[in-house]
Image 1: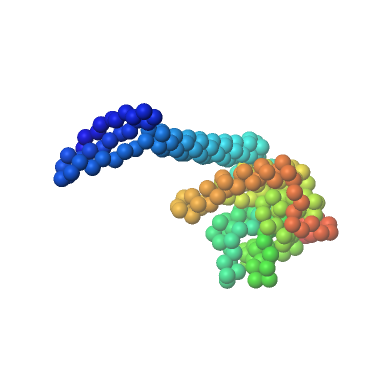
Image 2: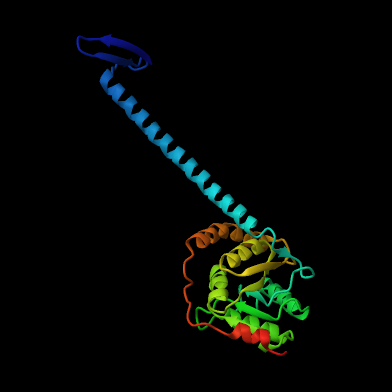
Length: 264
């Protein structure tokens, strides 16, 4: 391919000549057309660069919010994590719900929480258990399944109070304080969930300490639950700042006080 430039009175042309063809074919491209195409490419590149910059900024902002939320939640609960042996006594243990299988049996994570709560009761660290979970449909009832598990383990039924509207950790803490009158509690959950749960309950007005279960195998399920809990820290901070009402409030309940005062 041979390129030549031809000048005319008003316009410069670029001629492309192919020597391999039988006859010389020329293609004339106006300089203005060439510049227009170049400007189009430049505009496209500038738009792409702007989009890339915005994407990088959005990712950085999301990371900052996420890691900042995790750090803030951990700071709020930094002095509250104890073991079964050294946790200060409180009136009640608050145990949030988790998955219950179709046969009514608690999942291993939930069973571990319940066993820890039972041991707190047996050790005299608490005087009652508040089981809070999801009973959003007639076919799914976490609190009743939790109570059934504990009763089968020998826990007196009159030492157990149930909250059927604990649809989230935030709602469980808010309802424990506002509906059940809990002022002091030991929260019982998995170790990775403890900072978030303690922070939410303290924000609700409960004097809170916590004991975390660390008996679960560190397999794929554990890693998935751990990651989900870290992501939930951002929502926890949002809830603590905005402080929305739980989905259900209702009348004041005396079942926690009754369980505290009950004779086994």
